[in-house]
Image (cartoon, rainbow, N blue to C red; front, side, top):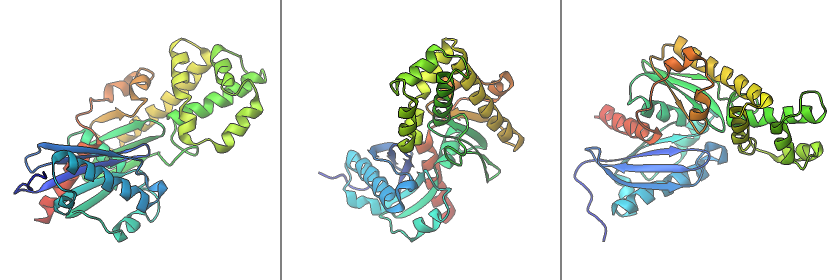
Length: 297
């Protein structure tokens, strides 16, 4: 039996990323009602496909809460999407019909930043498959890097993987020292450099990032080639953090799958600037959804 709709408004926050989509439904008092998950919702797969996953995650949240899927027409939504920086993406989203009472679209870094600092001014560095520096200061959004692998995303998992393969090939040619790390990398290609070349012809950023745990493990064990790669990556992250500080971000948080393992490699002055994360990207989206309703009154 479906639950009756509450008298107050409903809010849903959505974090749509390259690996999956998460939705969280709350009532006017901020009480969690239900959650939902779906597949990748990056705009790189196209607006229609991305929004289909968003809607699927939201319907899952409604189902968990006991509401009929038709209740989406009563929900105020805020949706953070990977790939919002792509030209024409906002216009394409505006043209696309949606099932919500109202909806706000934002960059996934925007909602992550808002969530990390409880809707206060601050910055984030996301270090995962890719990397980006992002801040919200005085209502202004500041972006540093994050233009996509391989031309950008310095210090990311994909970047670590790219450098791992490059140096392993050099070691194979005896241009740099061969270590346990470089041998482990070449083992992935059966010791054949042309197997590595064939792999790169079809590899994505996510594929390159699968080498990141190997790099970090060998670096922590003292392998000099792996340490060289991680030190270089950490310097790139240092630059992103310092730049956000120069832009006025009063606090900066480190996010992403590589955040905890990379933190110890950062410069001491950079580590002192970092603060703990207060909330996640879905919290940030919910903040946006509530703010939009308040502005509309």
